[in-house]
Image: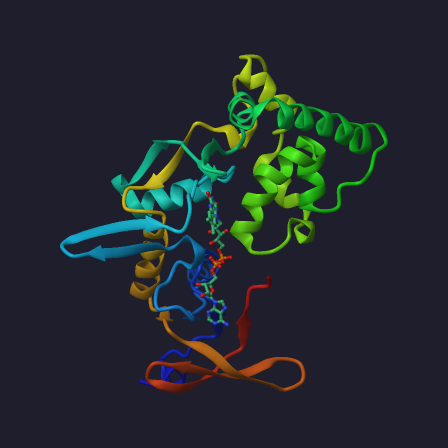
Amino acid sequence: MPASSLNPAPEVLVLGAGPAGLACAMELSRKGRKSFLVERDAQIGGLAKTLTIREGEDVFLTDIGPHRFFSKNQYLYDFIEDLLQEEWRKVPRLTRQFIDGKFFDYPVKALQVFKNIGPVKSVRILLDYAMARLRFGLLKKPMVTFEDYVVANFGRTLAEFSMINYTEKIWGIPASTIHPDWARQRIHGLNLWSVLQKAIGLGSKKGPKSLVDEFYYPQFGTGRIYEEIARHLVETGTEIRCSSQPVKVRHDGKRVTSVDVETPDGVQTLNLQHLVEQCR
Ligand SMILES: Cc1cc2nc3c(=O)[nH]c(=O)nc-3n(C[C@H](O)[C@H](O)[C@H](O)COP(=O)(O)OP(=O)(O)OC[C@H]3O[C@@H](n4cnc5c(N)ncnc54)[C@H](O)[C@@H]3O)c2cc1C
């Protein structure tokens, strides 16, 4: 059926069925606004999808990287618990990076790093940290990027070794182009000093939030959150089209009026009032 003939026709076209697009459609649905989700990939979930890999009789489920769920927002926990029920489980955290043939915990553990990299690089890490504290602390150099934030808190050597390396792999963009709020959100309170304190058993028991030792995780992969949101959306009238993407957007100079969407069934024209697109 052509999407434009859906009854009642959707008002909003949401591009991308990753966590953000699905959350957007979910909120619209709660407010009684009908949306249409278009996903370029064959599977929903974006970077947070869970992949199914088959090898003969065996079936493996794997996420694209570790997906710790952590938020200060209780509404989110309640919402997902409601969706996943007993599948939503608390699990111990173990995140490691494989660098130069060795495993390193993430976020960094000072003693482990010093042991693995040897005394010369360890001294360099400490000197770099002292330099960074001088520049960003004493001389008040502003932190305008993610890179500045982690260099200020870990020194250049350790920042490049762990945080910058990891972040650039995840996001595919230079850490110097990411806003420092991203670091403040994720690793607030974490710095070489707090890591050293933890290593020798000092410091606050609660610790910075990235050091939380347990987190919630769906039993069959992080993608289950998004599959359940999608199922709920479809049940309540939202259409989700995978392997589809917009090819033409028409507007009247002020507003979007219609969008041509290429789907596996051919091009469909959607007459809409709003278009939601993610910025990168
Ligand atoms: C290795 C790794 C580890 C991570 N670990 C964590 C973690 O521990 N905790 C955490 O909270 N987050 C983690 N993340 C981040 C998390 O995956 C992202 O924050 C989240 O997926 C972002 O959701 P999004 O919807 O904004 O974007 P995406 O997940 O990128 O989804 C965007 C979707 O839009 C689709 N799309 C794009 N353009 C179009 C178009 N023109 N038409 C149609 N569809 C389009 C894409 O195909 C994609 O499916 C991790 C990410 C990675 C890669």
